[in-house]
Image (cartoon, rainbow, N blue to C red; front, side, top):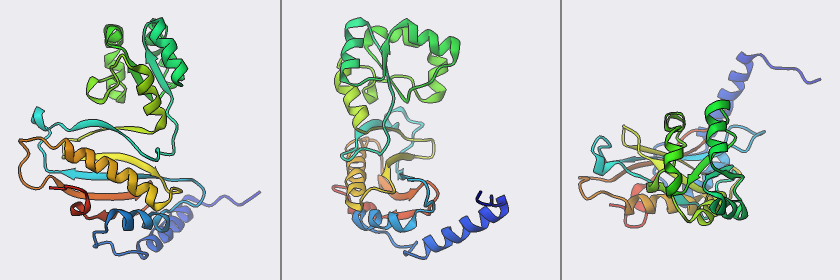
Length: 245
């Protein structure tokens, strides 16, 4: 059997890998999307797992103002590298439509009761038809803290359940600005080719630009940083995105 390394030794090895990763690029430089995404393969820390690649976008907004609460969803052109488990709460006809479109689970009270009584959360996204929101609302206090409450602003309250299920399975990512004005979102995996990551990154930033509130003053996209799960951050030039203000 291979020797198990003490935690201290593991940390030391991780530290060496991190140091090596940051030596492979200029940490102060702001790269264009293609250059930044091409560096991901050199900055990943883990050689055993396919780390997620995430982006942190700092926006010039005040989320405390309702009209500056940026929220939405984007379908990543190249997916995220993760298949979502989708639950749809709907009446029988729409539930069958959802299952035909690829939903993992679909039904009504039997699922909301399962969540409430059994603490069942074997799903990543929850979609509901408008006529079933009264049922879903009964467990809103359970779903809300987990970020699973359906919301029309991100398209998870809809009658077009087939389209929504297909988008979620294809790599649709929901995002919401945090109190500090930062949006975090996954854009793929470390195994993705650089151009695929860049396409996903561009899709997200272009949508954020379209969602710029009229009341937002000054620079809107203040900073963009991408990184693998355990790797160092790579700065991306905000001005390199299409129509970035």
